[in-house]
Image 1 (tube, rainbow, N blue to C red):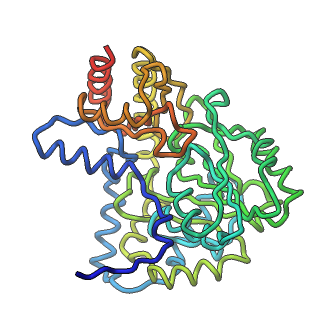
Image 2 (image 1 turned 90 degrees about the vertical axis):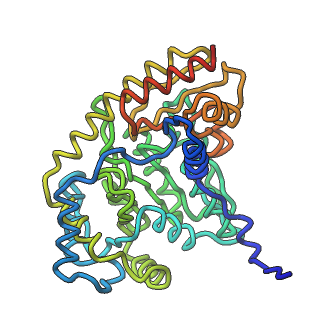
Length: 390
């Protein structure tokens, strides 16, 4: 019998539990169960029609071949123009690298700085791929604890206090997945000021939810701080903002010293992003933005509904979600662990959610609900869970 000898490093690679839950929910649905999915983190809206048509037109116009590894010039220029419009910053299009989604930027950034003996700070609870890839690189993951009492914003003092001579990279994410937390400008200011004492530490700022904020909150992009631009990697993209998760299109702005390195990683990894998708992304940035505003307005309305409904459940308290499209209620009062709640909500109530521990050990006592679903389904799901909790 064949026994393959896989690399030891594979044992350090984690997964994204939302996809595991999605698969389980699909199995139950295939058995005839009525499942409401509040687990997966993707908009439930269609990609706006003018974007779809731009992708189709690109195919019909013959854009079937390779493109430059870092993305077509017009798209990188449009990214720079969009960042100037939204953040009032100047970005060199040559520093923009287009990749298939947000994860390649995370992977490449960690691989650039992560190795045995190095430390990388990352948010916890946070997007699970951060910790997974850090461990895979051989570096030591150092969690930045995000706390409910701080609105799940990071504390600059705590982050700065965790930096050691081995720290190579700090990952931050605001608005945040899974918590919906948004870090206020004063904490970002304090972090940037403190980083002056650590000039060799790089920063990866995951800003994929940058256009999804509520109640007048502002998004603070780290691109607005010229003093760290020479060591900042800013990640954003199209997946969430334009309901383009399946198109697989993202980008990052890289410091000049890293552009050649990341371009070589792109060449080795995926050659380039498929051409038609890049033209669709160009139409998204240069075309009307009404669909984005409408989608965020609908998320805002659902946010209010789900937070109020969750707070009415016995043993549950749900802080207000400041950004993204996630609620992250505390379920300690139910007597269940996060994993127990996730499993019972799905198996007994037919509602797919994701345990807080899927996002790190500091997520114990919480469950993530995605409100990328209709208000009707959200209310039905909470009613089912209410029946389970008694």
